[in-house]
Structure formats: C-alpha cells, structure tokens
Image 1: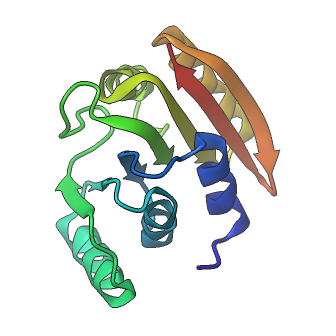
Image 2: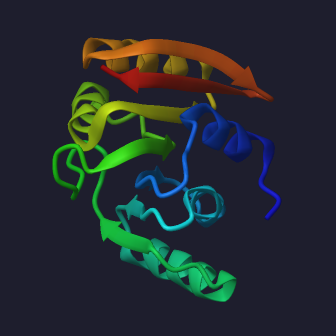
Length: 157
C-alpha cells in the first residue's frame, strides 16, 4: 500500500513493531498502513462520528484487513483501558481547548515506552501539542516537518 508522505512519516516516527497494538486517530489509509506494519497486532481506530467509522470498515474489508477495531470516541476520553497500546498515531484536534486533557489521556492508554506521533498542519499548533505532551510526562518530544505539516513525536516515560 502506498501512503501519502505525512502518513508514512507518522508510522515511521511511531516505530511500529509486529504484533504491537496501535491507536489510530485518522484516516483509513493510516489505519491500513498501521495494520500492514503490526500484522497480528490490533489497530484501534477512534473517531467521533459513526459514519466515518462505517466508511473505514468498508475500506478495511475491501483490503482484507482483520484485527482492526472501530471505536466511537474522542482524544480527551479514549475508549481504551490503561496501557492498552504500544503506539498512537494520527491527528489531534488542537482547536477545542482540550489539548492538555488529550495528552494526558494518550499517556494513560499508551504502555510505558510507547511511542506517539501526530501531524499538525499549523507549526504553532504543533509546538503547542509538543508542550502538552511534555507536560503529560512524555519524553524525547520532537517537532519536525513533513512537507507543509509539523510532525510531533514523543515517547511515554
């Protein structure tokens, strides 16, 4: 599967490993790309709209991808138990004022040493996301560029 440059960079920064469970906040292409890398691991796709999840389900079935779970939710309140995933990738809405809560929630669902990588179209918002992740206890927080977007990556301590 050929992924757009940003999605490829997100998956690379998360350092996904075979049989690892991963949280995806984003497109069907990103979820299927994560599935290709983790193989027998689970990919949990969280979206706030049921119709978006239904579209992703159709894409996964068309690609023959199993081990993909679709959950209704949002980043500030993720429908996963503590330490459930080894990686999280995608996009976080940074305009709703809940960025600190989202970073704390990501820290909760990621296992110790888990990696997170997120794209943000606005460089300033990328820096804000990096600060929120650091405040939530993430380490090795880095902000880079992929094309026109900021790529924020971090490791849960």
